[in-house]
Amino acid sequence: MAGKYGPSKGELQFRAVFSVLGLLAVGVLVAVRGVPKGPGLVEVFGIALVFFAGTLVHSLWRLKALAARDPDR
Image (cartoon, rainbow, N blue to C red; front, side):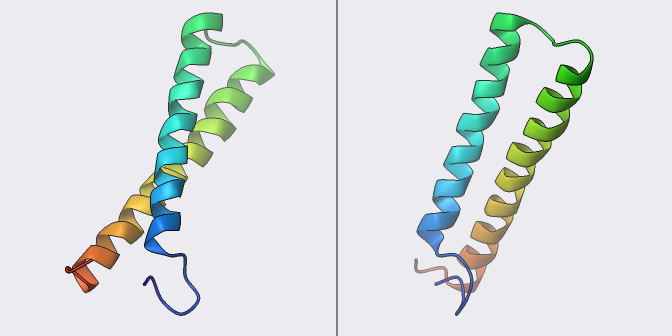
């Protein structure tokens, strides 16, 4: 259990998988459509990559902390 008010291990795993899929979707988008120019560059690389990468890092960090605190789970 992640804590009384924190997300569960299952939710953190879901967030991590969702983030990986989001990063893959951005990669496929760039591979198919090319690198956007102008404001699209900021939207695709700025917002989407920061959101998905940040969520992935945060989820993995919390999962690692959970594993260290309760190694049996």
